[in-house]
Image (cartoon, rainbow, N blue to C red; front, side):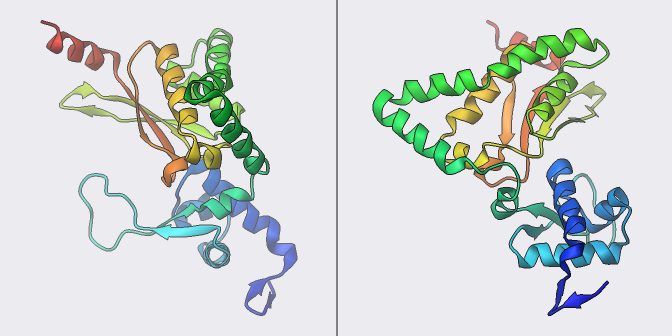
Length: 236
């Protein structure tokens, strides 16, 4: 593979795009994770990551601690920046922001909220259709499929039990097609969360959003029994 002035040749660009796309679809990843997913050597992945970092499309982060750490320094994870996300499907952000600004000026806060609710109507509409079409899917898995079909690259993470009690799941959206717009208009995120809560029939909590600089949009979906217990404890 030939280098020109320290950069990869143009014919190597598709592989670099695959690396970026893998981070988009799977969230912040280590070089080893990317090498395994893309069937590349770790050295090749690191070379592509270095170029993506130089271009401002990817940034290296310290991994979040989960449980007790072993010996040695944990591998860095690589996440897309706003510049990196711009290379995907956000070409109409400026127009959308201008339209919502106009709506806010002429119709006020409630007009923006109503628009946001209408925009996420696909969640409730498709949730019931996907559930009926594939009864083997759990509710959170249905949501992940609905969001993925809309370009959010969503997946479900099982939180596992604590003291023998299941804690629930997390809906993780690795990409947000409207993140730049939602940065200025958080009503879009709020409407999504409300729609998720309605289709599941329980309270959910948005823990992180790409619109506010997090690497992934994360919604906590508590276990049904734990939600019931909480309600029982506060009932007089």
